[in-house]
Amino acid sequence: MRAAVVTRFGGPEVFALSELPDPEPGPGQIAIDVSHAAVGLIDVFIRQGDYRDRPGLPQPPYVPGLEVAGTVRALGAGVDDVRVGEPVVTLSGTGPAGGYAEVEVVDARLAVSLAGAGVDPALAVAALPNATTAHLALTEVAHLRAGERLLVHGALGGLASAFPGVARTLGAGAVVGTVRRPSLSKARAAGFPYDDVVAAEDVAALETRFDIVVDPVGGQVRTDSLEVMAPLGRMLLVGNASGDWPHTVSTNALWYANLGLLGFNVGAYLAARPERGRPAAVAALAALRQGLVPIRTETLPLAEAGEAHRRLVAGGVGGRILLTP
Ligand SMILES: NC(=O)c1ccc[n+]([C@@H]2O[C@H](COP(=O)([O-])OP(=O)(O)OC[C@H]3O[C@@H](n4cnc5c(N)ncnc54)[C@H](OP(=O)(O)O)[C@@H]3O)[C@@H](O)[C@H]2O)c1
Image (cartoon, rainbow, N blue to C red):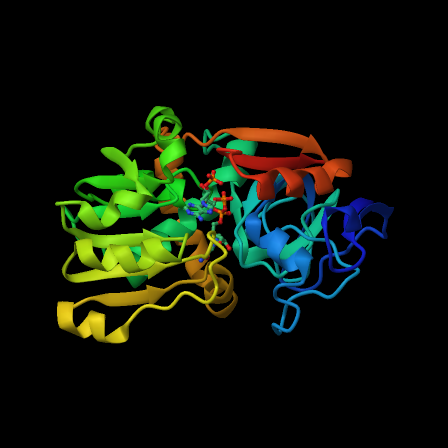
């Protein structure tokens, strides 16, 4: 099979399109003929070597890519709940690497059938893993109750933009997004079900009080959010797109104001509890079917994996980049 291989830690030029042996599924696994592989910011961080010392993450040479759509090619021993030829999409807990390829092998428990789902595979891989993350974060971590108000930072991002639609299906009240000021008009026109989108720079001045803050951005907006949280408000810490790694939040501010900060990392969660993935994904599919996660996709050939990473880092993609073998 052909695969886009990260040959060493470094810039987007470290990719090489290589011919590798077709992987075979082991017990409990399936092999997938990949039609679309999603490109995420996390792939960039891993390629740069930002997580080089973290256990379980790959060392070069490796094939990146956490989420794919495609059809089942072969079943490993003990797999009897999907069939060869079935259209599937994978969730982000299947392992650290492998999707930028013609064939990927994954844990069968984290493959979700698209048979009869009425959802296009490109939309499914662009939106369903993140929508599943949103569903798990809102239900199992933040324990969203009907009518609660949400504030979602980096509102157009791949992960963030799945939250308003999923929150709607769970009965949330108002959902407000934030973006950096230059992106305001684009965000308001993007079609995601936000009640309003405001500038991240103005968060501390908002009059509304929010029960749940979703923060994949980090940095100053994380601290500013503490000013606009309702008593017993919960902030979901789900990323650091700002790249502001040294930023810290005062723990004293939390007990003064009855606030909770909750971390959620879907990869580590599903690696530990893989059985939680499919039910959450099936629930999250409802949001996709209802058109509540209208994420734009842009498709590049596998050979342009480096270019895909360049575009992601340059910003302003406003959707998801997919690679097709
Ligand atoms: N917890 C989890 O399980 C999980 C799952 C998936 C992703 N993540 C994490 O979530 C974060 C976002 O990932 P993604 O795949 O959604 O990336 P993405 O699609 O590139 O979205 C990042 C968003 O953040 C915005 N942004 C970047 N820097 C910013 C800044 N300084 N201030 C305000 N907004 C800023 C970007 O806006 P522009 O369009 O202007 O660039 C973009 O809308 C990453 O840290 C990733 O590792 C976590």
